[in-house]
Amino acid sequence: MAGCKEWCKSEFKVKNLLLQHEDPQTFIQFQFGFQKVYLIWRVFWALYHVAWIIVSGVKADLWAGEDSSQYVKWFIFLTDWAYFSLTISTLVDAVVTTYVFVRRTDIREGTEVELPWFMRANWCLFNIGNVISVSTSLAYWGLVYDGSQDMSSVNIATHIINSLYVFLNISVTGMPKRVLHFWFSVIFGMVYALFTVFYHLAGGTNHNGSPYVYSPLDWSKPGTAFLYCAIVCFILVPVVHLILYGIHRLKLLIYEKCDCCRIETRYRRDPSTVEMKPQYPY
Image (cartoon, rainbow, N blue to C red; front, side):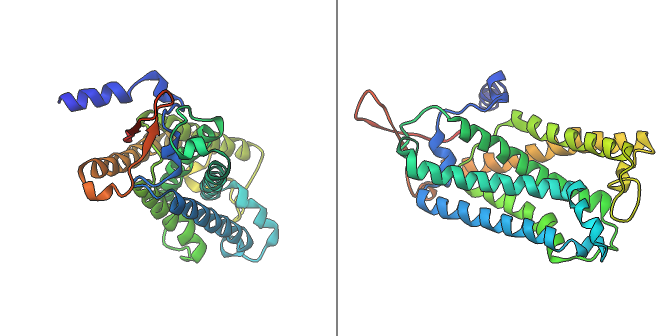
């Protein structure tokens, strides 16, 4: 009970609504060390997601048919918004990690105690990309997929592998998570919901000519559409965020309890002394 109280005290602070952290080093390595391998990990996944988002656009005929005039509607689907946000997140992560390795030795060695603006932006994108990707996959399989669509490679990449990547990435990297950071993804969901409203009012149609993007978001039936939006934005998204946070906490528990996992101890140098102090994640 005491441990739970301490956790609530440390986690539910107003400052944790924002992007503050005192150990930038943890953002550029695996939970268990290996900074150089982490750089390879980041670049690999950035290239992977960039390749697949290009493929999803090039292979638009898989969902739009032979009418090339419909291909531009790639931009209206939540799946593509979500995968784009995940791709941008991994790309920015790779750029930030590379920059830190080349130019910011202070962060690599753990002597910097203030999170730079570009790492804050990266952290925000990390939260949005992860939560929206998993939420979109769940919403797709639960609300949209009816068994008639072909299970193409693009469909698998954007509705299954994307979520598996998120779970794996959170399980092994040192990137922190906060309970209160759910609001980034909620805002993203609300922005998309508003987009579908204005798209409908402007007379927009999906690739099949229907006057909506997804049938659950048919704004000619505003009550039903609003209900689906509310469920996804204010229930599904926060629940997914909490699940991912739970995976993060489990990772930290394993790290703290399993000595064999501490392959590489991280240190932060106290600038006023030559003493090296161990720095553990939280």
